[in-house]
Amino acid sequence: MRIGGKKETEKNIKGRADKNTVYRALFSVLGALLVYEAGKMAGLLLAGALIGGGENAEEILNSGLTGGLENLIMILTGGLACFALWKPFLHFRPAKRTDRKEILPFFIMAAALALGLNILMAFLQLDRFSETFREVSRAQADVPLWLGIVLYGLAAPFSEELVFRGIIYGKARDIFGVPAAMVFSGLIFGIYHGNLVQGIYAAFLGTVLAWTMEHTGTLLAPMIFHGIGNITVFLLIDAAGLGGALARPWICAALLFISVVCFLQLLKGGKAGKSQSSIL
Image (cartoon, rainbow, N blue to C red; front, side, top):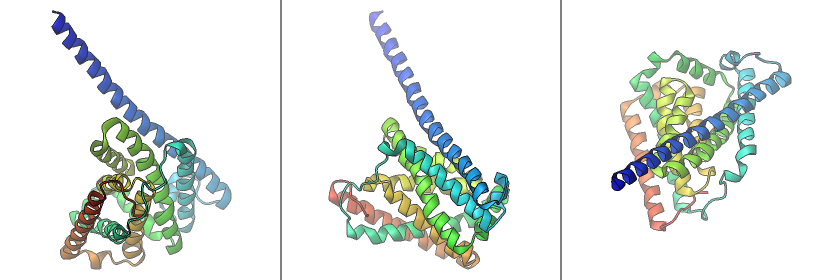
């Protein structure tokens, strides 16, 4: 009876510990997202005061220059709000000096993977099931070139990586361990985008971005990776309108193959160093 009672007690303790782990993870996610969204709402009010523009969130998706500027201010204020609260927890300093051999495959992988996944999503034609995605795509194409580079190449990667990799992945890693935390942060990133196409794309890319942070030991890595991917897609598909010309099976396969080769090269370099290395 004593042995059985001991096993039952241990089982109960383990059950409570598992529940506490889940609660801690959810609390971290909700806390980061609430602060981020509160910061974005403050940015919307600030943008309205500075540039007049739209008076509601819907107009942000349906205007060009004004909507782009509003979105820029919102994303930055959201990111800065999270930065102010979680600054001591964030890791910007690279774990090691730059490994120059990793710079080129890192940049190539970022561009090839983002472009290849976008072409793959086009082949799957998932946009047929997501009017929200079509609206977002039109809004992205309406943004002026210079503003798109700043918004998608700098502001969005800074704020989103700070929230989803710096805070959410960082907290989840302490709770679940590295592999599960990578997938967890990717799934949250995908769900956050709110539509099927971007959700699938962001979930996969978010997992890769978590890997780049783990590989380098710095939050700057996923920010740069994210920015390169965004700029590549924006310039070639949204700005230059080459989406149709690039939508070829062999181009998609080649880009994804190049991404895998670059990933393996980075992975090999990381193992050879027997410690975290930085591409920065």
